[in-house]
Structures are given as structure tokens and as C-alpha cells.
Length: 95
Image 1 (cartoon, rainbow, N blue to C red):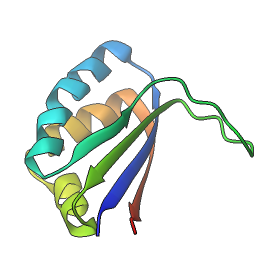
Image 2: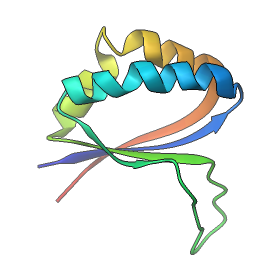
Image 3: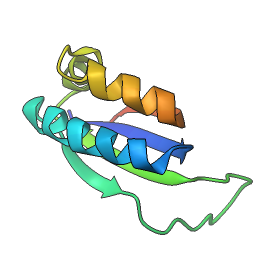
């Protein structure tokens, strides 16, 4: 069953965030993931959400998504993201 990583990123250092994007993308693909949403306009249809940059990743399974997030090849990129942005990240099992 597929799994989705849903991310809302409030970027505090746009220059450094570009480095994160460059480093993170190959790790997503290496772990079987793909980008479904990578930024773009967001419209709130209901509720009080105030999203920033929304990213949605699809992985073949919850396990593969967790392996990516914990992987040694993603750690350097993750450290950069954590230093240059505030992030809300969810992992959701698909149907």
C-alpha cells in the first residue's frame, strides 16, 4: 500500500533551502519515492490552516518512507532543512 509524506515548510533561509532541494531530491528517488506536489499555490478551502510551501511525496509503503527519512544519504539534507526552515511533516498510509 502506498504511503504519503505531507510537508508544510516555512522557509527562513531561501538560499540555503535551494541547497536542501538539490540534495534531497536524489534521496527521495533512491528510496523509491516521487514528488506529487513540490510547492506551488495553495488555497485553503476549509479551516484555519496557513500553509507555506507544501510538498507531497509518494513512497511504495510506510516502511520505505521511514527508511528514506532515517537514511544516511538523507541526513545531510535533513540537517540543512532543519536549519533553514520550520517544518511540519506527516506520514500517512494510503488506500
